[in-house]
Image (cartoon, rainbow, N blue to C red; front, side, top):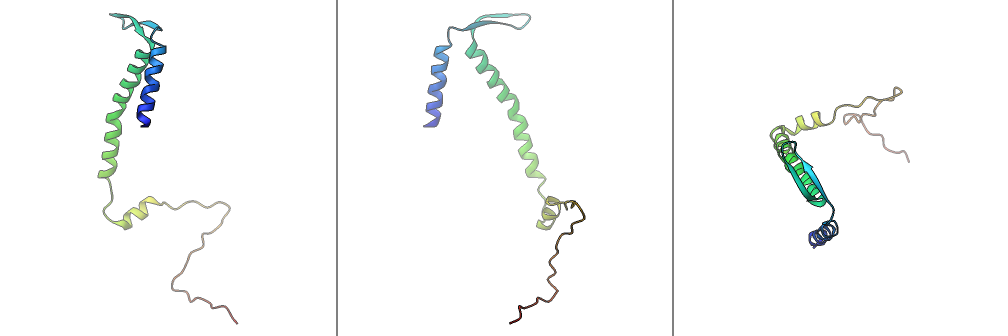
Length: 103
């Protein structure tokens, strides 16, 4: 439904701006009386087409580099952070006896 609303707004925008035209020169050929809306649409469409292969390649590259062990994942994903002002990280020691609250 949202798509149809946006499409309707685009058509209305194009209708209002159909009278605004410009000449587009490619150096060896000139297109005359091209609506501004069409030139902007073509520019955005070509930009999306150019970016598309880069996004598809990047996603497939991330999936192929997935580590096999969960232990490798946890070690590589969380590098140890440097602490400021000499503060030490509290380490939990599972071997240390726990103290019970005195009554």
